[in-house]
Length: 355
Figure 1: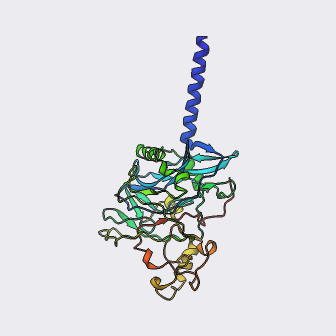
Figure 2: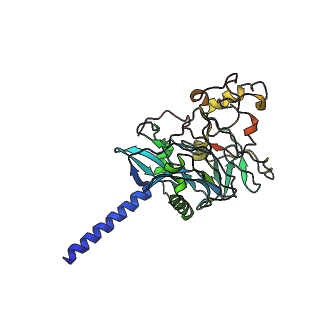
Figure 3: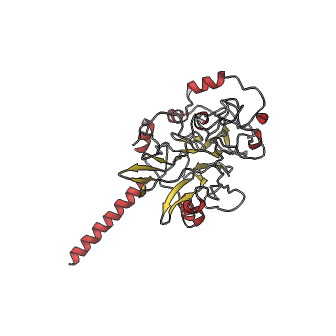
C-alpha cells in the first residue's frame, strides 16, 4: 500500500514536470474560442537604454480573454531579443505559444503586433556588442543617451487578427531562420514580465468582456505601471487602417549617435533586410503634389515614410474622395518619427499556408 502511494506520487510529480516543460515550450492554455483582434494604440516613449519593446497580447484566464499591455522591458542580458507569443489553431482548439528571450527572433504566428514585429523577424533594432541600436522609424525614441538609426519599412496590408490558423486566422508558416531560432536555447519571460501579466489578470478592466476589445490601458512605459502619464489607452478604429502618429514634441538630437546603421551580422541582415524591389519603387516614385497638411485623409500608405501598422491600406480600406493614392493623413495627427500607433498587419514577407 505504501509502495503504491509512493508510485502515484512519483507519477504525479513526473506529470507536473511534463506540464511545466510544455508550458515553457510555449503551451500554457488552450481554448475553443478565438481571441479578439488586436487593439490600436500608441507606443509609449522608450524609458532608457537597453529596454526592448514587448508587444501587448490577449491572454486567457478564468473569466476569459484579458489584455496584457505592451511594455518596455530590460533585456535579461545583452544580445537577447524577444519573440512574442501567439495563439495557434490545432487539434480543434486555440493553443497559446508563449513568448521567450533568445539570441534570434523565432516564429510568432505571422501576427503583426506593430512597432517592429510585423509578422516575421524584428525591424525595431539590433544588438551590436553590449549596445542596442534602435530603429527610430518604428520606435518612440525621444531620449539622447541611446544609439539610433533610421530604416524605412514598407507594408502593403493591414491585419489585426491575433491568431494563426483556424477560421479567419492567419496563414503563416515558419521561415528557415525561424525554424533555426526555434532550436536555440530559449529563456522564459523575466520576473517583471510575469508580474506584469499577473497584474493585468487581476484587473477586470483588462477583460475583453468588459472593455470590448479597447482596454483603457493598452500599453505602458514600464512593466506593471498601469497608472500615470506614461500609460496609453486603446484608440477607436475609425474605419481606417492607417494610424496617426503619437503627438509628441520634436525629439532632441542624439549627440552625434544618429548615424547610418553599421554593418550587421548575417542573421541581423536576414531579419531586417528591406525588400529591394520595394526600396527601388519608393526611391524612384515622385512625391505627390500638394502639402500633407492640406490633403484630405486617405488610407493609402505614403511610399517613403514608415507606417508600421499600416500595410496594404489601399487594398483593404476605402479611399477618401479626391485623395491621391499615396498621400498621407493630415499632419494634424502626425508628429516626428517617434510614437507609433499599433495597427497590426500581417506584412508582405511571403504568402504562407496555415499550420
